[in-house]
Length: 197
Image 1 (cartoon, rainbow, N blue to C red):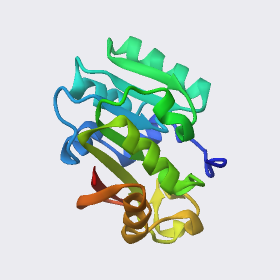
Image 2: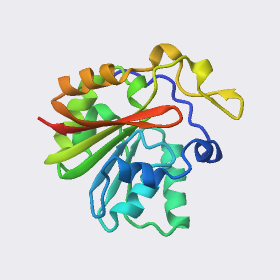
Image 3: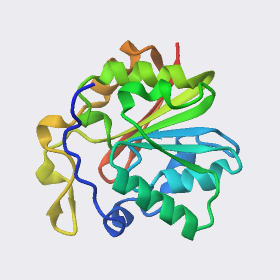
Image 4: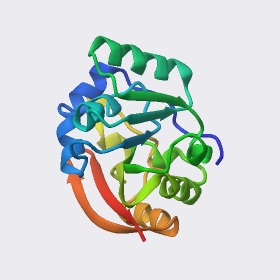
């Protein structure tokens, strides 16, 4: 699938200033009680952990290539007494080899812009979803990096990696999905929900 670009992982406090209520964001994008969830590129669990709270007792698979970030997510889950988080050390190009094909929701948050084979990723995600599953993609808006600041610092991926909603829709639909809906996620993101064709 090619090397992931822009792999810098902001710290928890930084994400907290941008995403005050990640669980509410997930619910607004269709993650529901009892859903089996897969998060691709889960980092240290900023979205995977609240997803696990929503999904409990169903499993939430946190898929990440960086072992240290996975270990941090596992420690946070222990501290918060979250028992349904399953950490998976894997590359997204082989997602279907590591995840049972019965996920209700796949979350790809702040990741798609840095993936080399975006269509291939969409196909792998399609393989792990149920026939009525949903893929939730959260992306930085396609504006110059200078315009996305947090605490007076420019944040987010480089301008040239950012994807418009149309670009996101094009690559994901080529991977076997159709668009269900799209929403703005102020201040700097948008979310698109897809369903398998």
